Image 1 (cartoon, rainbow over the protein chains, first blue to last red):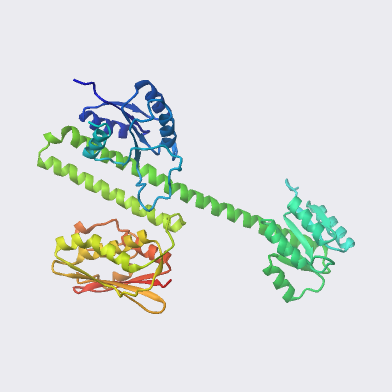
Image 2: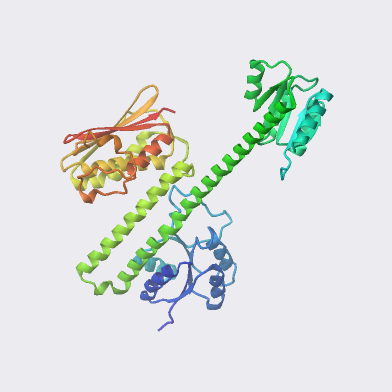
Length: 129
Length: 364
């Protein structure tokens, strides 16, 4: 039996972390939680997860983007799937916020709240399971 | 004694007048700078940014009127007072139009000078204070919107995420009743989120941060798109939905996304109050100045005495079935969006026969 895949969740809302963790654990993953960007990046380096899900709007608009940049800049972060979480629909016509053009690649943007089936579906296809 | 000495600049070619003014004002606790002609006066004003400038209207070189024009643009909040030897209503009005606050006819006594200076300074302080308060109010309104957006929506998002996780980890153990209750919770939370979203949209329209494009567009496309989106609901409810749009409908200027929301909203309302077998008609026409769209239904209608209030936030026509509850902000949103396009919306209705919304947009 192969070891469980590791997923890192970075979000400043403890409840959101816990609720999402329950879903991912139900899906058979080992889940690591970080409550802010700094801890998230440290944990990324120490745990080497197979996938990370990062909230976009933590302390400030954009903290999530900084975290994403830092993770993408690490050796293990170059090709690992990274998901972004957003409480607002970035594809919607009513948001003027756009990431900068030099912005590192995101594999998926998830709109909060995420349906359990959708979340597990996106994660398993990103991990090629 | 004033803690901060207000700075007054006198621009006049008469030396004796400059000195007289200086002495009179310095005695009352003002700091005074003087200039004998216009260009020097402008230079001093730009460098030291006085609170008040007294400017002689008639001087060799740059005229007092020109100085007033330049300083009122260059130095924010400066109070400009014209000194004139032959005060006529015409020159006073012209100076005030160019940005002067007051004028002082020659000859004047030191008391008159001080009174005018005092009044000018009070005016300036009031103006600055009013602006500060207005900015403070705007800042608070903006941060309140941000607060609501984040602090009120986050817990709702988390609750729905918990419901998702509840279903994921224990869903197979729930019987139908439990599943139903959970589903209802989810629906009610979602409608609260929708309410907050609508309310935020209205606040954004009001403070001008609601992003709307100003593109040339044709309502025929928006009507077609909205009708397409509403078609499945109409079909499900057994209501026919028809559109009638002339081929050469003139273009208007506006934002396609927000206008599509307006049409979907109004057609959506019509589907709620139109019984099976009824009809919804979207008909566009135009004249030289306006494109007008009528959206009419054969629904239950709105009582005559309620009609004037339907665009008010949270107004509901009593007696309507509970299942029709929306956010209560839909029509308010529509009205604001249409008004931001320079248009108008109104409604006519007859109980038992139906309602017609008339939307009017200026041609491009």
